[in-house]
Picture 1 (cartoon, rainbow, N blue to C red):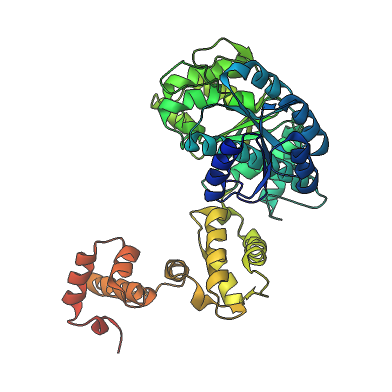
Picture 2 (cartoon, rainbow, N blue to C red):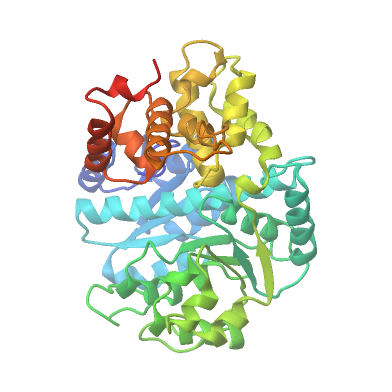
Length: 457
């Protein structure tokens, strides 16, 4: 759950209601400061600068609206959730206009309370992440996309030139190449940096929910729509909307996205058209032109999204950056230990093809840092599949003499090399040779009754 760090100030003058809410929140693991009046509540706000303030809209002679204004004066970044009776709904709407995140109408269940708190703290987490991203990326000398290679210099130059435009950008690259980092760099260097950076993974949201997630919905527009919901377009107002895995966008939603791009307008489910001011950055690891030929992606949407292209190189195409990245990730995950790589370990990493790119590299380095038995990480600590891949690039043991060579002996030599590369493991040797395991076992039996018979004496 988001936001178990930080504190919550709960202001409720009804003792019974306060105890019920206190029990539910403390049982869920939240840290609470309690008050039964506005004065004591505000004292807590001033002293602890809480992440969230939960307050009743009516506090005896005090007004929750006046308290809200005081909270925003002393703790601008605190989220505020107002609790209201049905008769005070108009005041709740006023509270949101004055800066409250949301309201919770009485009566509410324990789950409804926890869900409202979860949403408020999740939003606060996203807001803080955006702020940290802006600070980090604008810090002198900081580069979110690490690399000194020519390929990465080209990427950074393109980002600088594209950032000044409001035109859509399509980021192309394999999984793990840093497409969201590139989008973040585009955002913080653009005129949209004062607004939010909102990311959506189009492949991670069920198709039935994606329209509502992108464009929002109105209360009662479908079963379960208990209140109006602002979609990602409205959440990104004045900023950047990053649409990751755009190739997985359902075909029936593509005309609506096209309209949003062309007209800068959206239509929430069950609602009326609204104007939006959002810069769109999309990304994919798919071949969209191929998807167009297959009828799975609209050509007009593609051309609208791809006004500017930003291709990201695969890690195997910039091996000179591997040492820089590996040491950066090692420092990040070393937890105070002075870990280093041996030259043999570095050579193995530079010879590997990295199908998972930078993400795969970081995952490997994190695992090595956790399991390292000594400060110098050597080649023997590298996973077997990476060491095997390096042996593929060694000179072949099969040599063709001028007078020819029997095919049987060539096959025997290939099996010998595969078994050597896999330390005698049949399954890995079979994968190495691209044959089923039982075929390899048959061939080994054919050339000798024991595995050792396949090795030269």
